View 1 (cartoon, rainbow, N blue to C red):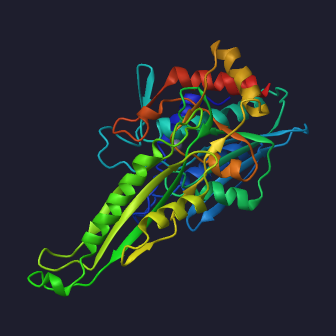
View 2 (view 1 turned 90 degrees about the vertical axis):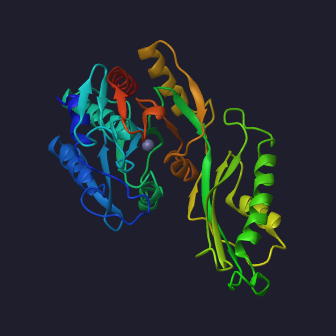
View 3 (view 1 turned 90 degrees about the horizontal axis):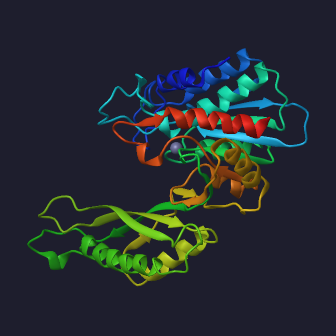
Amino acid sequence: MIDIVKLLEELVAIPSMNSMGSGRAGFEFTESNLADFLVSLLRKNGIDCEGFEAAPGRRNVAGLVDVGVEKTLMLEAHLDTVPVDNMEIGPFKPTVSGNRLYGRGSCDTKASLAVFFGTAVNLLLSKRKLKYNLLLLGTCDEEYGFTGAQAAVQRGIRADFGIIGEPTRLRIVRAHKGVMRWKVKASGKASHSAYPELGENAIYTMAEAVNRIALYASRLRSESPHELLGSPSLSVGVIRGGHTVNIVPDSCTIEIDRRLIPGEAKESVMDAVASILRGLPGIEVEEPYLVAPSVNVAPSSEIVSILSTAVKDVLGDVVVEGANYATDAGVFNSAGLPCVVFGPGDIADAHTSRESVELTQVEAATRVIERLLC
Ligand SMILES: [Zn+2]
């Protein structure tokens, strides 16, 4: 039998950092070693399993437990973690102290991986009868581009419903916001700063653009809110422009982060921004480099209902809520596979310099998944 906490320690000890588009590479900046470990874990225990490339050097892992029943449940968690710069603990040296296990990914989201994969193996080993066929999926690149989940959908994975493992404190997240990110560029004309009238200052143009966008962002806050998620939002997070102080700048770029509520579409969001920037000279709105859809699973849906029952049986109570962050669930829901988000750990501990997860939550999540499946 697999000890879930031991398995979690093994997963944390295998680096699987996402380079977050920085181009950093090396064995610590790939999910492939973790995918290989999970493939051999499942195969060793008789589960049909494969690793497959989602992008060059980026691997997913998919295992299938077919017990011959009607419905298939997907248990999915991402393999990648954020980088470890500035961590105050040994990121890949899992350490248990009191009720917590420390290390990069312990909370986000190797605890869910350990619970999903470990519990599936244990139930098979103990010859318990499962209520659902199981699709066990580990995805790469959730933290940056969601390409692992997208590749799984393109590969044609099939399930009736699913649970996406993320640190929700064992609450069921049935709705979350989507996210879009893109760049806006202003082009001008360079000149000597002593003769600014000979140039066109791209920073001035961008300043006007940013003012208009800020007004639009404040209007968004008063748009009719979603019942669980509130209003959509927008933030300009990066601005870069100019070369040196004695040259009138010929270029300036900003990056926009836009959080979407259910019902908002990429096209209408882009149209709105294009229309508020209309008339500004030399402005170019690029296509988004990231689009992660929002999630809105009906409270009456089967996955919310069966998981709620399991959580209530184990914890005595269940909370169903919404979240502002985006997950792989958006990709699967958009493809017609209803998925909620659920797992041990607190999002407030994710990505931190002392990332950790409560072991009592790992244990409770394990019991919830057992209860759900048997
Ligand atoms: Zn995560």
